[in-house]
Length: 396
Picture 1 (cartoon, rainbow, N blue to C red):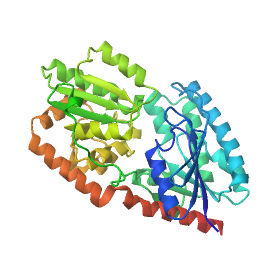
Picture 2 (cartoon, rainbow, N blue to C red; picture 1 turned 90 degrees about the vertical axis):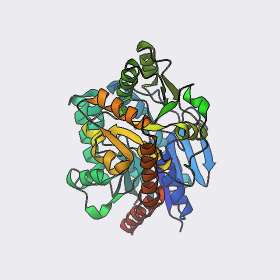
Picture 3 (cartoon, one colour; picture 1 turned 135 degrees about the vertical axis):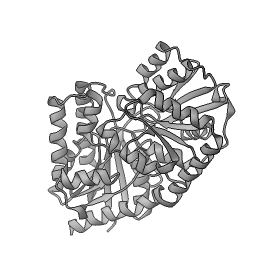
Picture 4 (spheres, helix red, strand yellow; picture 1 turned 90 degrees about the horizontal axis):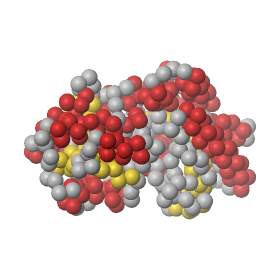
Protein backbone atom coordinates (compact mmCIF):
# COMPACT_ATOMS: atom_id res chain seq x y z
CA UNK A 1 0.00 0.00 0.00
CA UNK A 2 1.36 3.41 -0.96
CA UNK A 3 2.10 5.66 2.00
CA UNK A 4 -0.06 8.77 1.84
CA UNK A 5 0.90 12.11 3.38
CA UNK A 6 -0.95 15.38 3.89
CA UNK A 7 1.13 18.50 4.53
CA UNK A 8 -0.53 21.69 5.83
CA UNK A 9 1.30 25.01 5.72
CA UNK A 10 -0.51 28.11 6.92
CA UNK A 11 1.61 31.20 6.34
CA UNK A 12 2.86 30.77 2.77
CA UNK A 13 1.73 29.25 -0.50
CA UNK A 14 3.44 26.27 -2.09
CA UNK A 15 5.75 26.15 -3.99
CA UNK A 16 6.74 29.64 -2.69
CA UNK A 17 7.50 28.05 0.68
CA UNK A 18 10.78 26.50 -0.43
CA UNK A 19 11.24 24.30 2.67
CA UNK A 20 7.81 22.73 2.36
CA UNK A 21 8.24 22.31 -1.37
CA UNK A 22 11.59 20.54 -0.92
CA UNK A 23 10.00 18.27 1.67
CA UNK A 24 7.02 17.48 -0.56
CA UNK A 25 9.08 16.72 -3.66
CA UNK A 26 11.61 14.66 -1.70
CA UNK A 27 8.81 12.54 -0.24
CA UNK A 28 7.14 12.14 -3.63
CA UNK A 29 10.44 11.11 -5.24
CA UNK A 30 10.89 8.49 -2.53
CA UNK A 31 7.56 6.80 -3.16
CA UNK A 32 5.09 8.71 -0.98
CA UNK A 33 1.74 10.00 -2.22
CA UNK A 34 1.88 13.68 -1.19
CA UNK A 35 -0.91 16.25 -0.88
CA UNK A 36 -0.40 19.82 0.31
CA UNK A 37 -2.93 22.32 1.68
CA UNK A 38 -1.84 25.96 1.69
CA UNK A 39 -3.34 29.45 1.23
CA UNK A 40 -4.00 31.12 -2.10
CA UNK A 41 -1.73 34.11 -2.68
CA UNK A 42 -0.70 36.35 -5.53
CA UNK A 43 1.16 34.23 -8.05
CA UNK A 44 -0.20 31.03 -6.46
CA UNK A 45 -3.95 31.41 -6.85
CA UNK A 46 -4.99 28.19 -8.60
CA UNK A 47 -7.37 26.26 -6.25
CA UNK A 48 -5.83 22.95 -7.34
CA UNK A 49 -2.61 22.07 -9.10
CA UNK A 50 -0.69 18.86 -9.73
CA UNK A 51 2.94 19.92 -9.73
CA UNK A 52 5.83 17.45 -10.04
CA UNK A 53 3.52 14.70 -8.82
CA UNK A 54 2.41 16.63 -5.72
CA UNK A 55 -1.29 17.47 -5.28
CA UNK A 56 -1.66 21.08 -4.10
CA UNK A 57 -4.97 22.44 -2.78
CA UNK A 58 -5.05 26.19 -2.06
CA UNK A 59 -7.78 27.58 0.15
CA UNK A 60 -9.13 31.16 0.31
CA UNK A 61 -7.23 33.33 2.78
CA UNK A 62 -7.90 36.46 4.78
CA UNK A 63 -5.69 39.55 4.52
CA UNK A 64 -2.30 39.22 6.22
CA UNK A 65 -2.52 40.22 9.86
CA UNK A 66 -0.23 42.88 11.28
CA UNK A 67 -1.62 43.02 14.82
CA UNK A 68 -2.65 40.41 17.42
CA UNK A 69 -6.33 40.66 16.43
CA UNK A 70 -5.41 40.69 12.75
CA UNK A 71 -3.44 37.47 13.17
CA UNK A 72 -6.31 35.91 15.16
CA UNK A 73 -8.73 36.55 12.30
CA UNK A 74 -6.24 35.47 9.62
CA UNK A 75 -5.35 32.20 11.32
CA UNK A 76 -8.93 31.50 12.38
CA UNK A 77 -10.03 31.61 8.75
CA UNK A 78 -7.09 29.44 7.72
CA UNK A 79 -7.88 26.85 10.39
CA UNK A 80 -11.49 26.59 9.21
CA UNK A 81 -10.53 25.99 5.58
CA UNK A 82 -7.71 23.61 6.53
CA UNK A 83 -10.13 21.37 8.39
CA UNK A 84 -12.75 21.40 5.64
CA UNK A 85 -10.17 20.63 2.95
CA UNK A 86 -8.52 17.94 5.12
CA UNK A 87 -11.86 16.24 5.71
CA UNK A 88 -12.61 16.19 1.99
CA UNK A 89 -9.10 14.90 1.13
CA UNK A 90 -9.27 12.22 3.83
CA UNK A 91 -12.44 10.68 2.40
CA UNK A 92 -11.48 11.22 -1.24
CA UNK A 93 -7.75 10.41 -1.30
CA UNK A 94 -6.88 9.32 2.24
CA UNK A 95 -3.71 10.01 4.24
CA UNK A 96 -1.78 8.15 6.92
CA UNK A 97 0.36 11.01 8.26
CA UNK A 98 -0.50 14.69 8.61
CA UNK A 99 2.41 17.15 8.75
CA UNK A 100 1.72 20.61 10.19
CA UNK A 101 4.15 23.43 9.42
CA UNK A 102 4.08 26.36 11.83
CA UNK A 103 3.59 29.27 12.43
CA UNK A 104 1.12 29.32 14.06
CA UNK A 105 1.00 26.41 16.49
CA UNK A 106 -2.62 25.50 15.86
CA UNK A 107 -2.53 22.92 13.06
CA UNK A 108 -2.59 20.08 15.60
CA UNK A 109 -6.29 21.00 16.02
CA UNK A 110 -6.89 19.87 12.44
CA UNK A 111 -4.99 16.65 13.09
CA UNK A 112 -6.82 15.65 16.29
CA UNK A 113 -9.99 14.15 14.72
CA UNK A 114 -7.92 12.14 12.23
CA UNK A 115 -5.74 10.71 15.00
CA UNK A 116 -8.85 8.75 16.02
CA UNK A 117 -8.46 6.89 12.70
CA UNK A 118 -4.77 6.12 13.28
CA UNK A 119 -3.33 9.14 11.47
CA UNK A 120 0.00 10.26 12.97
CA UNK A 121 0.95 13.91 13.39
CA UNK A 122 4.39 15.25 12.42
CA UNK A 123 5.13 18.77 13.63
CA UNK A 124 7.49 20.62 11.26
CA UNK A 125 8.89 23.27 13.60
CA UNK A 126 9.77 26.34 11.51
CA UNK A 127 9.56 29.06 14.20
CA UNK A 128 9.33 29.23 17.98
CA UNK A 129 6.03 31.08 18.22
CA UNK A 130 6.30 32.44 21.80
CA UNK A 131 9.70 33.95 21.01
CA UNK A 132 8.40 35.14 17.63
CA UNK A 133 5.58 36.98 19.39
CA UNK A 134 8.03 38.60 21.82
CA UNK A 135 10.27 39.71 18.96
CA UNK A 136 7.31 41.53 17.38
CA UNK A 137 5.48 42.97 20.39
CA UNK A 138 8.02 42.78 23.26
CA UNK A 139 5.41 42.02 25.93
CA UNK A 140 4.15 38.92 27.71
CA UNK A 141 0.43 39.67 27.59
CA UNK A 142 -2.58 37.42 27.05
CA UNK A 143 -1.71 36.80 23.42
CA UNK A 144 1.79 35.69 24.44
CA UNK A 145 0.32 33.26 26.96
CA UNK A 146 -1.89 31.86 24.20
CA UNK A 147 1.24 31.21 22.12
CA UNK A 148 2.84 29.35 25.03
CA UNK A 149 -0.33 27.29 25.55
CA UNK A 150 -0.65 26.37 21.86
CA UNK A 151 3.01 25.38 21.70
CA UNK A 152 2.56 23.13 24.73
CA UNK A 153 -0.41 21.40 23.11
CA UNK A 154 1.42 21.06 19.80
CA UNK A 155 4.26 19.24 21.52
CA UNK A 156 1.75 17.12 23.44
CA UNK A 157 -0.05 15.84 20.35
CA UNK A 158 2.98 15.45 18.05
CA UNK A 159 4.01 11.87 17.31
CA UNK A 160 7.22 13.00 15.59
CA UNK A 161 8.88 16.40 15.35
CA UNK A 162 11.15 17.82 12.66
CA UNK A 163 13.36 20.64 13.97
CA UNK A 164 15.28 23.07 11.77
CA UNK A 165 18.35 23.00 14.04
CA UNK A 166 19.79 21.61 17.26
CA UNK A 167 18.43 24.55 19.30
CA UNK A 168 14.89 23.70 18.28
CA UNK A 169 15.53 20.02 18.97
CA UNK A 170 16.67 20.98 22.46
CA UNK A 171 13.42 22.88 23.02
CA UNK A 172 11.36 19.90 21.85
CA UNK A 173 13.09 17.60 24.34
CA UNK A 174 13.35 19.97 27.33
CA UNK A 175 10.39 22.32 26.94
CA UNK A 176 8.19 19.95 24.97
CA UNK A 177 8.98 16.70 26.75
CA UNK A 178 9.41 14.69 23.54
CA UNK A 179 11.65 11.64 23.47
CA UNK A 180 14.94 12.36 21.63
CA UNK A 181 14.30 9.44 19.26
CA UNK A 182 11.11 11.18 18.07
CA UNK A 183 12.89 14.43 17.15
CA UNK A 184 14.79 14.78 13.86
CA UNK A 185 16.90 17.76 12.76
CA UNK A 186 15.89 18.61 9.19
CA UNK A 187 17.85 21.70 8.22
CA UNK A 188 16.55 24.03 5.55
CA UNK A 189 19.49 23.96 3.16
CA UNK A 190 19.27 25.04 -0.48
CA UNK A 191 18.80 22.56 -3.30
CA UNK A 192 22.01 23.01 -5.31
CA UNK A 193 20.38 21.46 -8.39
CA UNK A 194 18.05 24.46 -8.70
CA UNK A 195 19.57 27.25 -6.58
CA UNK A 196 22.60 28.11 -8.72
CA UNK A 197 24.41 31.37 -9.57
CA UNK A 198 23.64 33.14 -12.84
CA UNK A 199 25.66 35.80 -14.69
CA UNK A 200 25.57 39.15 -12.84
CA UNK A 201 23.56 42.01 -14.31
CA UNK A 202 25.39 45.36 -13.81
CA UNK A 203 22.15 47.27 -14.43
CA UNK A 204 20.88 45.98 -11.05
CA UNK A 205 23.54 48.06 -9.30
CA UNK A 206 21.60 51.22 -10.20
CA UNK A 207 24.67 52.94 -11.63
CA UNK A 208 26.86 52.29 -8.58
CA UNK A 209 30.00 50.16 -8.23
CA UNK A 210 28.68 47.99 -5.37
CA UNK A 211 25.45 46.19 -4.53
CA UNK A 212 24.28 44.86 -1.15
CA UNK A 213 21.66 42.12 -1.49
CA UNK A 214 18.97 40.88 0.88
CA UNK A 215 16.20 38.29 0.53
CA UNK A 216 13.51 37.43 3.05
CA UNK A 217 10.10 38.17 4.46
CA UNK A 218 9.32 41.82 5.06
CA UNK A 219 8.25 41.93 8.71
CA UNK A 220 9.27 43.45 12.01
CA UNK A 221 11.57 40.75 13.35
CA UNK A 222 13.63 40.68 10.13
CA UNK A 223 15.50 43.84 11.16
CA UNK A 224 14.98 45.72 7.91
CA UNK A 225 14.49 48.97 9.83
CA UNK A 226 18.03 48.38 11.10
CA UNK A 227 19.26 47.84 7.54
CA UNK A 228 17.72 51.14 6.44
CA UNK A 229 19.51 52.92 9.28
CA UNK A 230 22.74 51.23 8.17
CA UNK A 231 22.18 52.45 4.60
CA UNK A 232 21.54 55.97 5.92
CA UNK A 233 24.67 55.81 8.09
CA UNK A 234 26.77 54.78 5.08
CA UNK A 235 25.23 57.49 2.90
CA UNK A 236 25.80 60.18 5.53
CA UNK A 237 29.43 59.06 5.88
CA UNK A 238 29.98 60.19 2.29
CA UNK A 239 29.90 56.77 0.60
CA UNK A 240 27.56 57.10 -2.36
CA UNK A 241 28.94 54.09 -4.23
CA UNK A 242 26.73 51.40 -2.65
CA UNK A 243 23.17 50.42 -3.50
CA UNK A 244 20.92 48.16 -1.40
CA UNK A 245 18.31 45.88 -2.97
CA UNK A 246 15.87 43.94 -0.77
CA UNK A 247 13.88 41.10 -2.33
CA UNK A 248 10.71 39.62 -0.85
CA UNK A 249 7.14 40.32 0.19
CA UNK A 250 5.32 40.50 3.48
CA UNK A 251 3.07 42.63 5.70
CA UNK A 252 5.84 45.11 6.51
CA UNK A 253 6.61 46.01 2.90
CA UNK A 254 4.45 49.18 2.57
CA UNK A 255 5.84 50.63 5.81
CA UNK A 256 9.42 49.88 4.75
CA UNK A 257 8.93 51.57 1.39
CA UNK A 258 7.58 54.61 3.23
CA UNK A 259 10.64 54.58 5.49
CA UNK A 260 12.86 54.74 2.39
CA UNK A 261 11.06 57.96 1.41
CA UNK A 262 11.10 59.38 4.93
CA UNK A 263 14.86 58.81 5.22
CA UNK A 264 15.51 60.16 1.71
CA UNK A 265 17.07 56.88 0.60
CA UNK A 266 15.36 56.53 -2.78
CA UNK A 267 18.76 56.77 -4.48
CA UNK A 268 20.28 54.14 -2.18
CA UNK A 269 17.65 51.46 -1.39
CA UNK A 270 14.90 49.68 -3.31
CA UNK A 271 12.43 46.97 -2.30
CA UNK A 272 11.44 44.73 -5.20
CA UNK A 273 8.54 42.91 -3.54
CA UNK A 274 8.08 39.23 -4.32
CA UNK A 275 9.79 38.28 -7.59
CA UNK A 276 10.39 35.13 -9.62
CA UNK A 277 13.15 32.72 -8.68
CA UNK A 278 15.05 33.78 -11.79
CA UNK A 279 14.95 37.46 -10.77
CA UNK A 280 15.95 36.59 -7.20
CA UNK A 281 18.97 34.64 -8.40
CA UNK A 282 19.98 37.49 -10.69
CA UNK A 283 19.89 40.05 -7.87
CA UNK A 284 21.84 37.88 -5.44
CA UNK A 285 24.33 36.78 -8.11
CA UNK A 286 25.00 40.46 -8.87
CA UNK A 287 25.43 41.47 -5.22
CA UNK A 288 28.94 42.01 -3.89
CA UNK A 289 27.85 41.45 -0.27
CA UNK A 290 24.70 39.91 1.18
CA UNK A 291 23.21 40.79 4.55
CA UNK A 292 21.13 39.25 7.30
CA UNK A 293 20.05 42.12 9.58
CA UNK A 294 17.78 39.98 11.81
CA UNK A 295 17.56 41.97 15.01
CA UNK A 296 19.30 40.47 18.04
CA UNK A 297 16.64 38.75 20.16
CA UNK A 298 16.04 35.33 21.66
CA UNK A 299 14.02 34.10 18.70
CA UNK A 300 16.62 35.05 16.09
CA UNK A 301 19.45 33.75 18.27
CA UNK A 302 18.10 30.19 18.15
CA UNK A 303 16.62 30.23 14.63
CA UNK A 304 18.20 29.18 11.34
CA UNK A 305 17.55 31.46 8.38
CA UNK A 306 17.48 29.88 4.92
CA UNK A 307 18.77 33.13 3.43
CA UNK A 308 22.17 32.49 5.02
CA UNK A 309 22.66 29.18 3.20
CA UNK A 310 21.27 30.67 -0.01
CA UNK A 311 23.87 33.44 0.11
CA UNK A 312 26.56 30.83 0.76
CA UNK A 313 25.33 28.67 -2.13
CA UNK A 314 25.97 31.66 -4.42
CA UNK A 315 29.46 32.24 -2.94
CA UNK A 316 28.53 35.54 -1.34
CA UNK A 317 30.21 37.01 1.78
CA UNK A 318 27.75 37.89 4.52
CA UNK A 319 27.32 40.53 7.19
CA UNK A 320 25.05 39.65 10.12
CA UNK A 321 24.77 40.04 13.87
CA UNK A 322 26.60 37.65 16.15
CA UNK A 323 23.80 35.18 16.90
CA UNK A 324 24.17 31.52 17.86
CA UNK A 325 22.54 29.67 14.96
CA UNK A 326 23.56 32.29 12.40
CA UNK A 327 27.19 31.77 13.34
CA UNK A 328 26.76 27.98 13.21
CA UNK A 329 25.39 28.19 9.66
CA UNK A 330 27.78 30.73 8.16
CA UNK A 331 31.04 29.96 9.94
CA UNK A 332 33.81 32.08 8.44
CA UNK A 333 31.68 33.05 5.43
CA UNK A 334 30.36 36.01 7.47
CA UNK A 335 31.50 39.03 9.42
CA UNK A 336 29.65 39.30 12.72
CA UNK A 337 28.48 42.68 13.96
CA UNK A 338 28.22 43.85 17.56
CA UNK A 339 24.71 43.36 18.93
CA UNK A 340 25.04 46.49 21.07
CA UNK A 341 26.73 48.98 18.74
CA UNK A 342 24.45 47.82 15.97
CA UNK A 343 24.29 50.46 13.22
CA UNK A 344 27.92 51.69 13.11
CA UNK A 345 29.39 48.19 13.41
CA UNK A 346 27.13 46.67 10.75
CA UNK A 347 27.99 49.56 8.41
CA UNK A 348 31.71 49.19 9.18
CA UNK A 349 31.65 45.51 8.21
CA UNK A 350 29.87 46.20 4.91
CA UNK A 351 32.37 48.92 4.02
CA UNK A 352 35.34 46.75 4.99
CA UNK A 353 34.17 44.00 2.66
CA UNK A 354 33.59 46.43 -0.18
CA UNK A 355 37.16 47.67 0.22
CA UNK A 356 38.68 44.15 0.39
CA UNK A 357 37.68 42.20 -2.73
CA UNK A 358 40.15 39.38 -1.99
CA UNK A 359 38.41 38.73 1.35
CA UNK A 360 35.00 38.80 -0.31
CA UNK A 361 36.21 36.09 -2.67
CA UNK A 362 37.77 33.98 0.10
CA UNK A 363 34.68 34.16 2.32
CA UNK A 364 32.36 33.39 -0.57
CA UNK A 365 34.34 30.32 -1.54
CA UNK A 366 34.40 29.12 2.08
CA UNK A 367 30.62 29.46 2.34
CA UNK A 368 30.01 27.63 -0.93
CA UNK A 369 32.22 24.74 0.17
CA UNK A 370 30.36 24.44 3.50
CA UNK A 371 27.02 24.22 1.71
CA UNK A 372 28.36 21.67 -0.78
CA UNK A 373 29.78 19.42 1.94
CA UNK A 374 27.38 19.88 4.89
CA UNK A 375 24.35 22.15 4.52
CA UNK A 376 22.74 21.45 1.13
CA UNK A 377 19.24 19.98 1.11
CA UNK A 378 20.50 16.53 0.12
CA UNK A 379 22.06 16.20 3.58
CA UNK A 380 18.72 17.00 5.25
CA UNK A 381 16.66 14.68 3.08
CA UNK A 382 17.81 11.52 4.89
CA UNK A 383 16.54 12.91 8.22
CA UNK A 384 13.25 13.89 6.60
CA UNK A 385 12.78 10.30 5.41
CA UNK A 386 13.86 8.95 8.81
CA UNK A 387 11.21 11.11 10.52
CA UNK A 388 8.52 9.66 8.27
CA UNK A 389 9.76 6.13 8.81
CA UNK A 390 9.45 6.75 12.54
CA UNK A 391 5.88 8.02 12.13
CA UNK A 392 4.87 4.96 10.12
CA UNK A 393 6.53 2.67 12.65
CA UNK A 394 4.20 4.17 15.26
CA UNK A 395 1.19 3.33 13.09
CA UNK A 396 1.99 -0.39 13.10
